[in-house]
Image (cartoon, rainbow, N blue to C red):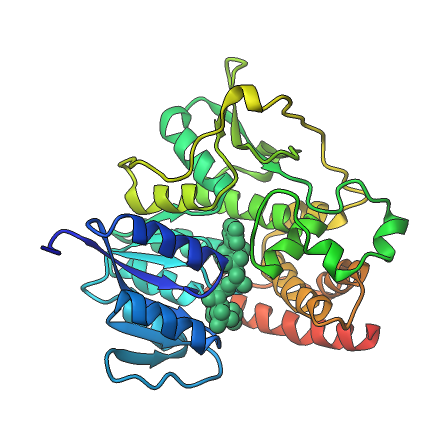
Length: 380
Ligand SMILES: NC(=O)c1ccc[n+]([C@@H]2O[C@H](COP(=O)([O-])OP(=O)(O)OC[C@H]3O[C@@H](n4cnc5c(N)ncnc54)[C@H](OP(=O)(O)O)[C@@H]3O)[C@@H](O)[C@H]2O)c1
């Protein structure tokens, strides 16, 4: 009865993307089967998922012990790698936080799997490595990030004619605030995202526009467009996710309700399209769709991301790692909102560049994390 079901390894199953993915799997029990799951430390939530879906593997990447005899329990990045390359896994959906995602991405590509990648930090830090792996493998890389999912679909039709990629950004919860007002902003204000319901780290990144900067780098590696041909536009309603500027003067856009189940389902079923529980927007309800240019002065991390991408040589990896540490410190209440960019700029300014191979980029990532911790401590 179960033959033909795609077996999904879901890494970061206990997070926001993980939960939306489980919703999609629940909706199509005859199409998908949960083969493996991972969490970092939320063992209780992982146990609930295991009880419901009965996967064969579970991986714990952080602290905590999962004591079960009804499935195989693995640990750490080695566990993610083993399952990503497992002969039974068909699709590996990577929705972990941070840069650990590079390990199952490489292992899965080498084993010829479909990697559905939500974890943008992996491409930001290790984009050149992933592209090389992809070129030499039978595997495929399908974006889950909503903007990149939209662009991926548009480029299937218009790759030859596309001059520019346009990524939309909601502008985040602080879109209208002055720099002065940002100095006083509290965590609760930052976590109140106007359109998307996401994990805390990405919600903070949306408020600094670092998230859009990371997405510019992600788009570069996914679609091989240079930074000059990747634009960002603020679109507060989050209905349009990606736009192509075509050479004949046309713009083509992808629209959907802002719900991550749409791009997740698309990545799991591509090239098929199945009925979704998420309705497409009714056009008369969209009384106004508005657009404005991003303000690089109020949101300097977006500008930094373009500069880091142009420099290459590990600068995006360092920017990303410093941002991870600074955002965590902000979430822990140790530093203020504007200290995030202060820490990131300080670390990036001290970096001198490195080689573009995996070992050197991992070194750069670790160096930036150490440095960022020092900077954060000096700001506390
Ligand atoms: N949320 C969105 O709408 C959205 C949209 C586009 C892209 N993304 C990207 O998708 C990824 C996940 O985002 P999210 O919002 O779902 O995050 P989240 O809600 O914080 O969930 C993160 C998941 O990763 C696990 N995790 C945390 N730290 C980890 C570590 N150091 N190593 C391995 N796993 C770790 C967590 O496990 P525990 O629960 O045990 O801590 C959880 O399962 C991020 O890269 C984000 O940029 C998210």
